[in-house]
Length: 268
Image 1: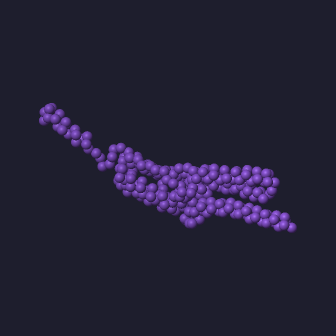
Image 2: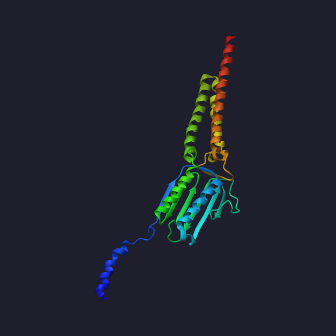
Image 3: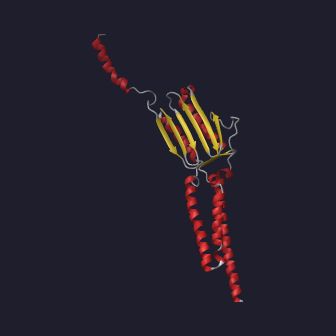
């Protein structure tokens, strides 16, 4: 084969070389989303993490023998527990009774259908992220994760709800304190005293009750899931509202009795 034939053959093969693609994309594909507030037990979380780890190994197939890193982290206040792998219940390490931050991290060296997966759940943000060289595998695992954790989500929780609630209740209680005190002085009567008392008690409850735990944006509890575990924050919050309504009802009842007593005294 002469020089000109080699050049012609190379030119003919050039389009085929440029159009060739490997079994999965040569660029990294990423999918990420933020979820609503989540509350679940450690057994629920372990079950979902096990499913996720198995899906990653299945997607990577032969790539599972490559060097990879996988770990989970729990955090509650100043307590922080880091565990290698994904089996945290059987690791021999005791996780906090209630954790308000959780991380799951998976990363594999080299190109693979699923290169990285991260779960980052905190009070302020709950993010799931999947990256890889196979868009089909990334989409499949991402959809499975999103659907699984959505089952444990709720609307009445998180920093946004707490902030909005504190502003609304704060204005109501402060306004009630000012209005009730003004009426007592202006009317020179104790019949309006219940309003500032009710408002001050409400302010004290707002300050003292652990709303960051009751309405946490994320929480994982040690032990089996139960109604109290899953809906404890709702029970606590409803109890708080019932307490406030009870105080208001007591005030209205006392005022009514006071008015009847005053009328009876005047009639005499």
